Length: 92
Image 1: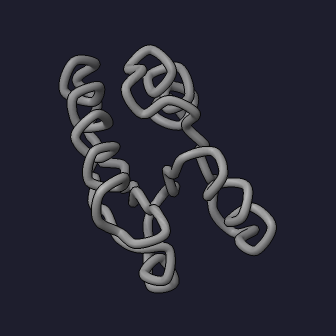
Image 2: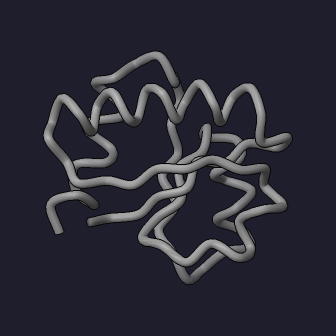
């Protein structure tokens, strides 16, 4: 099972909506993926496989975080984009 955390600046609205979309894609693709969400400040204790965020937040995280893959999503409502960006990580 892969483990991902979804983050946004506040850890409420955007990350919650993106979590729902990622779970929908994972269910459709039958991926074994455990997803949770938090604020950007809450990822320090995350011990999993990758981080998912909207592109602007992902860019900020990449500047600081070098140990874990970070997936940037431009349109959180676009399940095709989510699938395309997560597939390489899920198929490792």
